[in-house]
Picture 1 (cartoon, helix red, strand yellow):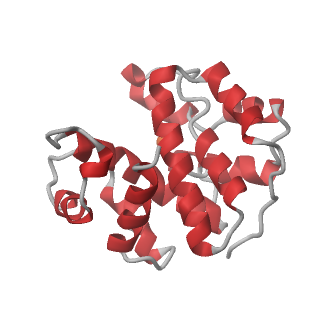
Picture 2: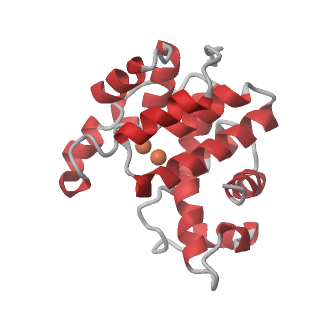
Length: 193
Ligand SMILES: [Fe+2]
Ligand SMILES: [Fe+2]
């Protein structure tokens, strides 16, 4: 089942301030990439671009405020939990969109019952994966990464092993986009960040 979600009217600046409050400069890049990818995918699906982009921008807002990755079990349990809700309520983020964001961490057991939630889940790992591919390019630029090289690297288990390919491949099973097309859209969006 897919639910219609609230539409955001608050400008990006307000959300960016929240990011600046809780996320260090070096970790913001992942948020900006995810924002750009979500905006491009909203356009592809004819959904609300601003709402999707802001969900991408804020999806890991709690990441540096919870237990660090040195205690992975605690980290993954806390990610997308109470603090995400608390921070997003500071800027009056609607409840349904908070839940959609929280659902990208499977551990929270929140159903991904909207197209936005499904897209965020599939896109999250892919942005990290594409960054990993860019790092092995001679010039280390996202714009030098080709769709085919991303697809090829998916099959290499030891490459960016932390990224769960199955999550990315839900673009096919949950969203009906072939992975080549999905990578093309996300890659194009990330190249403009
Ligand atoms: Fe996350
Ligand atoms: Fe993320």
